[in-house]
Length: 264
Image (cartoon, rainbow, N blue to C red):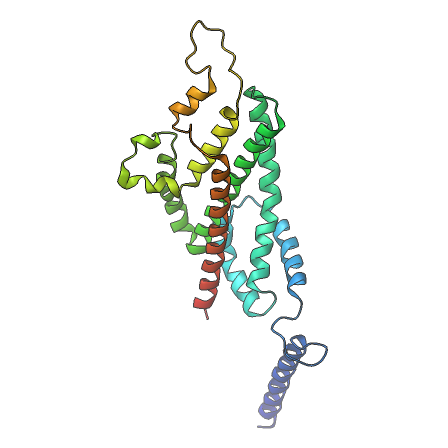
């Protein structure tokens, strides 16, 4: 009885010490309770460095988020960092890689296709491609936050088919039935394709070089007319891509918060 009582006292003492340590870690300098041991800026910086380290692995966000969900649940409920700090870290860590690789790709494509060497036209083309990359990455983020790996791998390509089909590349806008035309207004591929086409052929571009006797698409306006883009607005395309990007990022955050709350 004496040994069991001593062991029981030791267990109670250890549990008391753990509780005291947890309380001390979550108290401010004035003794008032706080939710996390550090500020959100420190949390963001720590998670950002860890996310940049993990980005060396060949994982997209659609795969990474479901696989990191158990770690996120454990560390978040242990009050290591808030969900805002974690989400902001993965968002910021992804932007440099997306931007650098997209710029390299756009420069190569723009030069190899002999486009006009005009800075304003190249800037418009680059901005459209950058926004397409950011929005596409946001789609993967939403799928990864809302679904597991198995469902996400299957549903993500299926969900992208309508946006690609009604983007104006395969079917012109006038040929799309009226009851399906609404899909074009929520398709980020449509706005990206329209923005790159306007940056390439609009804004008083000179005639294309052609050494044949007859070149139907020598005039850039004819190309835009064939694509049903003669009345398109580049500013509207950029604004739509930015709006879709913000909506997708907010949706991914809400899905993550819903998953965390459902595990309590």
